[in-house]
Image (cartoon, rainbow, N blue to C red; front, side, top):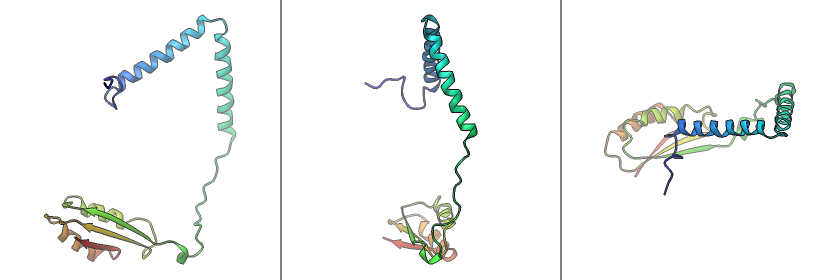
Length: 139
């Protein structure tokens, strides 16, 4: 039997309240034990050192140079998309996939159409005139 309390995003407020009550209970219990204040001091010291390290440390630089010195070394990529009756979304999908930032001529987009019964084929034919990397395979 599944718990109704822990089910996805539906009980977020209950979960947040549960976590806050647990954290609050732990904090209150530290004041009732004589050595609890030392735990608070240790955790505060560790978090302070960590914060100081984050502030002092320089971020690592990400290299923007390509590992490929020549455009001929860049690998070719083929994207395959299987569709069926996607009349409402196919134009935007093809436009986004053909607009990827990759060397033109080094990637192909293959649309595999599985017996669409709507206007998907005519839309694809129009798009094939616009994008040279678009290939259509009709099944």
